[in-house]
Image (cartoon, rainbow, N blue to C red; front, side):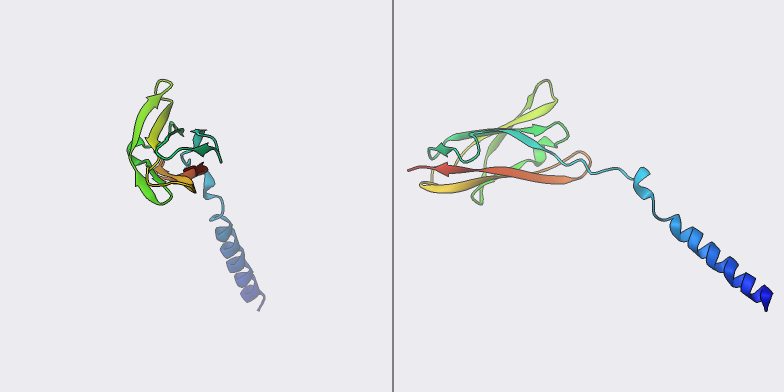
Length: 128
């Protein structure tokens, strides 16, 4: 009977030690580095005219061809150019002329080089 108990103790110890081995996978997996956006022009909550220009900076880890911008749900054409010797990207475009007397969110979506996607944006007030 004692040998039987020792067998089960051994089995339980073996099972618990292998279950602890599954916990620390963070050293072998890469972290997701999402693209970041900054230097918003015009500033957050600024009042602008319909058809006004906007710009922002996308981080260097952003795939420039993946950047998509929409203004109040409407897709917007943008121009992407390298900034500071390629350490970031300058993105510019214009607000739709059809949007007047309303608030509009300039929404950004992009993919990073680490296959992570990210988003951002800001709100502006469009006057008559």
